[in-house]
Length: 313
Ligand code: 0X9
Ligand code: ZN
Image 1 (cartoon, rainbow, N blue to C red):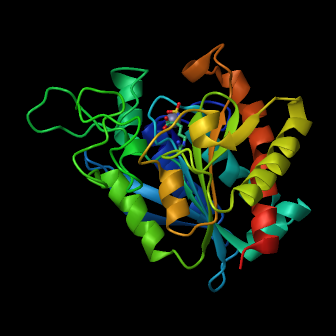
Image 2: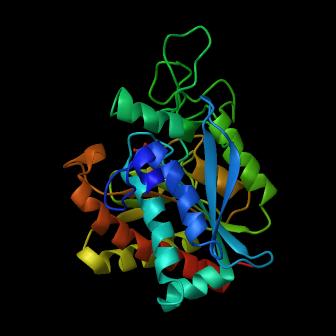
């Protein structure tokens, strides 16, 4: 078609450019208007539109799950998963029992690419770029680590005030347009939101709050049980071994993450996924591994969503 010629052909088993992903968000709505709609939640520092896909059978207020992919620019498998999730929803609604029930009774807000400017930069300038690309006044170094910029113990642990650092936390909580857009959307929809899932790579881990303190979260027992069930489901597909646990102790302590912030806003089921692999390819996960990674991750997401549907008030 004309649009695939202009933007490059979209593929679920390849890494897509932002242009292709943006065109895809429009196409998928056009082809599945009963199940998917598109909302612009803001603009990036460089002025690109941030598109969020609302996925699920349209009806009045339902329990909702928010998913962010690609906070970190170089973690390409994360946006690939968000696209895969929407594909599965549109192809399997009415066919897969579990997914149909979930989509009928819940809304999934899928942000396929949070850090768009950074992602574009990984295609054009530096494949291993992590932060966004906002200019830092008085500095030659670009960017803030958006997963240090949320208003959760901001600036305390594993964050830097140095603009050139990979974990620069920004000039203030939510100083970045991308963080602000997500936080505003969450605040506006807080009453329906029951879960927040943040997708990263790599390490094969499922993490829950807190990252900013070694104190266990008040509901850590339930968070742990739900994580265990999700990881067990994931492992049934290819036997991929995931570890799970509190962020601060399982990976390392970090302040200002989206997961901790969402949890402190009262979103009970807040998780960070570190997708494949274990470091063999790391951020450069080859395209032939997109499909198995997404297939197994689907089972974990469905497991968490099922739990949310059954239990969250
Ligand atoms: O450092 C991060 O932001 C995440 N790891 S990554 O390698 N993808 O950069 C881990 C975040 C874990 N979540 C919390 N600490 N809350
Ligand atoms: Zn990351």
